Length: 231
Ligand SMILES: C[S@@+](CC[C@H](N)C(=O)[O-])C[C@H]1O[C@@H](n2cnc3c(N)ncnc32)[C@H](O)[C@@H]1O
View 1 (cartoon, rainbow, N blue to C red):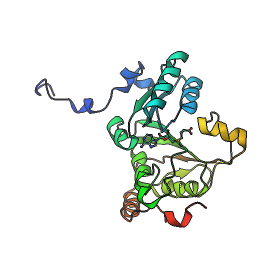
View 2: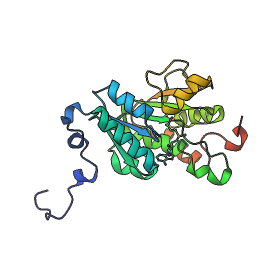
View 3: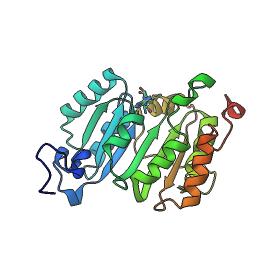
View 4: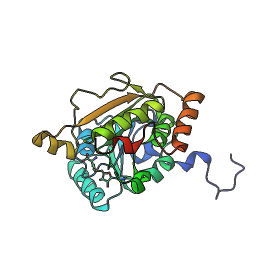
């Protein structure tokens, strides 16, 4: 590549240099992603509990981003970076294929109205994207307070070829090590939470990608959203 002019970006430079940004030796980098951390209850405590991981959190709301950054600095966390923006736009620009060891999507907004459905975070498109970005054995940590969203999301992750760690179609009945901000409230009020965990079995088989693409093109993610609305 030495014959390239200096002004040209080397192909390796199109993604952030996370090892440098986390001050981590490249071979020790263990990237995790949280989409929509809100006020950061999970991000902060998870990063503190696991100094061996490097957590990237993407949140649209500026005030939440600033709050998490302030708390992170006060706690001296060096393994948490928070970015303001739309995860759907930033994720493909942030991460190379098979570079993530875990993705956390906790209590994404349900977007009930049909005209808002395209804003939903978890659908087959996201699941297929995560199949490509998570390393083999990489984990999906999904949580919601909406039963219909839980069912739909389980279908989406499975349609993309993820292996449900608790059996096909099943929710996880265990208790997470770290609760999200919203989950802490529910732990007090007793409101039910629906959780599911998935494993990336490796690169997607062509038929899985085709099926997922077909579902996505139909505008549904393995389910008909109106059928499950508010159930
Ligand atoms: C219902 S809150 C849950 C917050 C947190 N995960 C929790 O459990 O307490 C959903 C969060 O996702 C964020 N969000 C929604 N769409 C997003 C997107 N496209 N990219 C990043 N964050 C998003 C919202 O701003 C909000 O903070």
